Length: 407
Image (cartoon, rainbow, N blue to C red; front, top):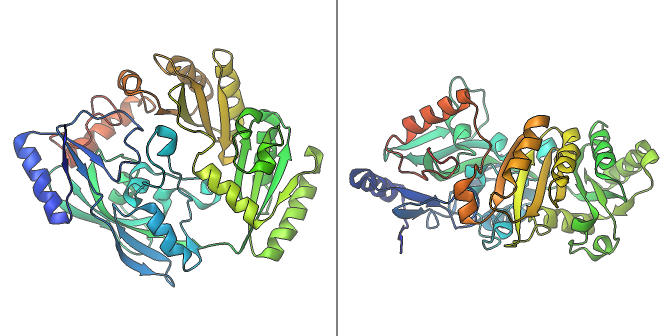
């Protein structure tokens, strides 16, 4: 059984890393285990978990700033923010349940390590955009700090943002400082039914071009829509195209009416109130319509919104595939049958022709060990990536092979 190391302080983590370097041992870096089944499987000598590095270290509601140790559960962060009617502006998703890990286990460090951003990214930006600073220990056993408590222009390398999305391959994050925002007083959702994928994306992109501040734009084809827990929508038996508006109650009502008028050629939508809207978008954020199954693999495809339906249609010519579109079509969650390569050849061919990036989110460890999980890098990007790995982790002990087999 692989040894589990649980540092409770930064100095203890430094000591552990220094010992690993001396003994030439490798480490798998995890938070609370929510994302262990995502990305490439790591074959390491020990597991280092930040689960004991938890708790808030700063919260200034009037300044909209919070700091927390990296192992703090995301659920705890959001519960504390909820007491002040505040929230994380990038609406982080939890990929744990869809990859076979426990739901609700995602840590705030894991959020930033993977840049986990949800539906509100189209207007609010990604997790990376709201990170003010962090503390971390690199593969040299050095504790360092990057950034601070205010957002400012950066000259040179922004280390904090550079670590966001690195999946623990460069350093182990011990603390993060980030921006928060007020929670909207009211939420409303326009639900258009029965639209084919390409027409639905047209609706979504058109809506985002209006001045009505759409904060969520998603499309769920019929087969996947039937999985929704919100009975009124699941029982509709049709594809659902969703547009979310958030503001004060009067503003939401006014904008719903104006947006509906602007989109009248696409039909008359159902209108969801605040309670139903929030329940729906929480469900989408948890990816519960993409439940774990050993019979399917799951891809996450980022592309130009109008190219999403084209990519899916191309892949469907080769295999059965179900899709869920977010970010007005710019993010496609694609479920395909289990296969020796998880349909990698067809997926990457379709994405290469139309532009974008494909990441294999869910597949067996054997498949994830034999195919490229993350989008293959261009030579110039690979050189930069290897240079950063050498600078932060010269011995290559942190999450070796998590993102790419030789890095």
